[in-house]
Image (cartoon, rainbow, N blue to C red; front, side, top):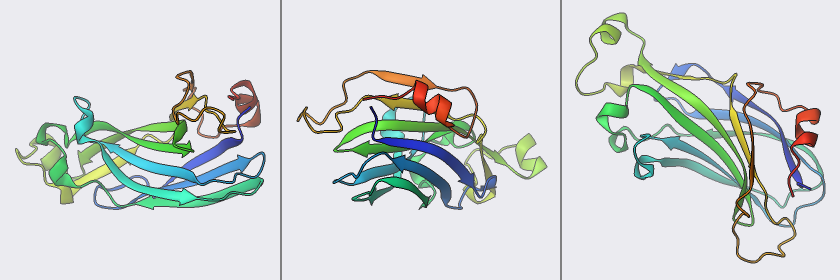
Length: 187
């Protein structure tokens, strides 16, 4: 059984200018004390063509975490425009929120992100070189894709890798209520 249940993620400051920080309000519950930190990451997918353009915007370690319900706001600076291919700057991409325990990722929440110009003229005639200061970012917060991975919570498998099994929930509900969580419990 999973020892951590992510109950809700709220996307803050959305829509926003491209240059504004990403902000997620995360609510999770620990079913028992965790002796080691939870590692949370925000990852911006710079291009669907290659993971080499992915940018880890920030990593935060939370813990040790006592049993109970917890909430925090995770904020990360926007991606570095110089690391985004010109062809992928405008349009749809993805931002990922991940959490790991003992170097084992156990949940990944993915959101589609639409980057477009706010100005009608720039929408109709986009410049050859993206003007990031004029881009607006809109995260599709109502339809996250949630992937859960089975992990070894008790450290009996010392390899530090997940067992490769996953459960995906993408029903479009932002709030992950108890009935969904119970039906998707992982070890």
